[in-house]
Length: 413
Image 1 (cartoon, rainbow, N blue to C red):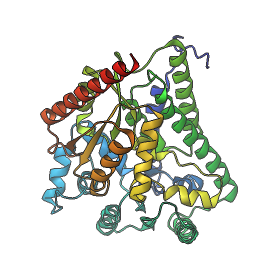
Image 2 (cartoon, rainbow, N blue to C red):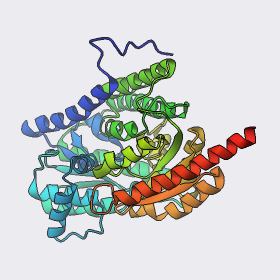
Image 3 (cartoon, one colour):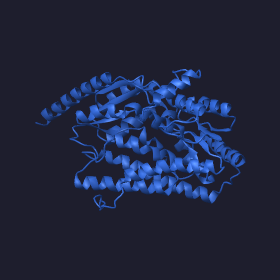
Image 4 (tube, rainbow, N blue to C red):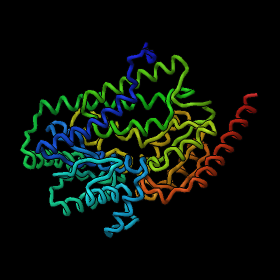
């Protein structure tokens, strides 16, 4: 166990360090843009090792859209995109991003306009059309790494070679676009740091398996921005390692960032409802429910040992895998982190993620013998979520979990 003195007057908590790293990423991009360098907009699971090795500043529209939504501006941005002719059926992240491309400012979260785009469809194919529209409207290059959806459980060697060829081509295209030169030695260093960061981030999430958990599960949603935007930077690795030390200290001192008695533990399935973080977290706290399992936040801990493993790792993000593998991801983390139930976000924006949820929910109930509830919402468009519906579902889940615990106690007697 760590001997971190979290009460020292000069101690800076990992939470504050992570917030600064995320803010610094935007500032670096603004500084680069203002000095005449080319900056890019990058999909969250595009192999960040490429841009980091080339010394390019990239920012992440998904991070920006989540921040804009969390700060209350999701509606006005979505409505502006709809006024441009974009359907409200498409992803709210895409609508916010396309809106920002058009109006070029948003006081809730500004970032520089792009000179190139880095797109990867391991998240979903909506990314391609979203980024193609921006590339067309701004007349800038888009570099795509296509990672096919897999019906098989594992990624085969043919797919690995296909992805590797695009990885190599993306490097050449970026060298031509930016005038930067790719260094194999720097690439090796970036990969080592990225692995250090990824391991620390996943380790931090794994502390949720302790009973009670030393962490409020919603902390994972707040910290994950750095796992997206700064995996290849040493300061990110150090901050996540510090977060692990803090969790170890919490365990040692029987403390937690979860305020209150942890009566129940749940899987929170799906992307966070960013416009309603407080509205989704408060009813849980009132019932003594802590989120100890999620696959969303940890999707950005990409672990590999060599080039082939890297290509496979980027093909195993949640929306790119078979139903069988997707179900196992949820079941395994739920079992590891000892959940009593599951809350499933039926996210109107994310059709691919939510489309498989009825089957995933069935398998979770069957394998883990736990109750599950769903609620309607959206990752960034506030018009879809009903707080009354959510509260009712949480109350129903709590009643079933309480009854299950009572039955278990009778069995013990």
